Length: 335
Image 1 (cartoon, rainbow, N blue to C red):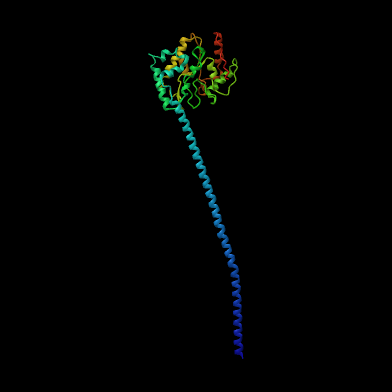
Image 2: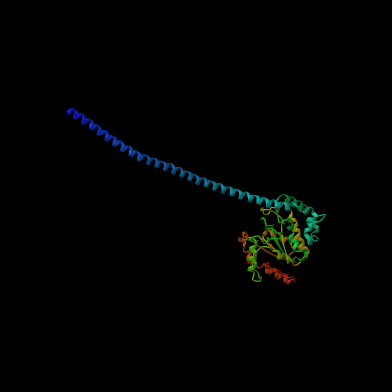
């Protein structure tokens, strides 16, 4: 009986244990089944979110690079367009310059009323130097950018006729920057900025209490030339952006020295305004016994250490002299 009881008890205990193990296993299975899907979902979220972020980041980087490339391309195109425009302008200038005066005669005919008083220099048999100047210019205008435009080389002679000359203002050479030079000394086209030298000339006029003058908003001195102020440069042409480039090899100095000498010899009671050492050297060409010479430092700011150009009364002194000799005074107010 004990054996049976024992055996039955053992079997009962074993079955109970198996039942408990089974319950534990079932519990574990349930727990695992609950955990596993949760873990799977979490991993899926990670798998989805990380590539999405990377993709977005890559997209942003790509967009930034595209923007940079776009900007670079725009800059390059802008630069190319600027260069293209510059070349176009240069080409147009050159095309204009190419058509220089075809003959020496057509060149000197631009002197108009000055041809006759200058004939002993510009016509045979003593015209070798002027022919040299013509050939020099013909080559320069056809191969480089030269100022002023060929039609304005003798502009000072064309506006101020030989018979009307009252005052001579001598400059050195034309302004070398594009658009400035217009064939009159110290003068620039109305569209251009007023040069510093001309600003000081205007200040000098403003400081002269005998002259009614208000500074204009431009630097075109044509109005003076029309009244008999001969605005002559010693050298009449210049290469673009190369100041004094035609001073030595053009022989312009020989021509303009002759012009000054002829004015001195054939005229009387002319006022010569000589500014700076270069112009003052021309004093030797002028007969001071029949002309009035006023010397001063150059109006350039660079010369101001030598004195103050703007305090001179040279413009009212010019008018006083003209009036004294029965010559109509100059209206210095630029219009």
